[in-house]
Amino acid sequence: MSTDLKSQMQEVLAPLQGRQVVLIPALQAVQEKFGYLPEVAMEEIGRVAGVSSNVVYGVASFYAQFRFIKPGEHMIKICLGTACHVRGAAGLAKSLERELHIEPGKTTPDGKFSLEEVRCFGSCALAPVIVVDDQVYGNMTTTKTKEILDEFR
Image 1 (tube, rainbow, N blue to C red):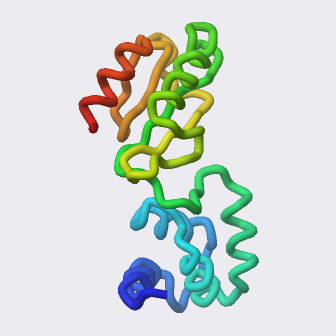
Image 2: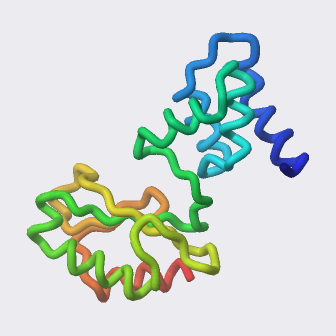
């Protein structure tokens, strides 16, 4: 384990030291800092909480909000909810996969983009919708999607 990573992890968890640690807020704090949950996170959270790293991993792996793989520089999320689906989101998702050469849940080899599928952003009037780094883009087409990706390359 890198000394720098361990010290950063301890910094994130310091406010929880000496208190009964609630695992989910601890996991959220670490993911907020690093963008994902590095393996050392399970050990450090377990140490602070007084439970095994297996228990911590069990909790983290139960919830879809937690990631165990470092995300790309830009997170692309495509909505596959009902409104987006009926307006062509499935085809748009396949187009993104082809353009990025990755499947949902993966990161491009250069670390530039990660791709995730979600069920709804609550922007149904703009369907189909993608979100790039928390910026919502609506009424998407494959052409518009490619143009947006080009802006981030």
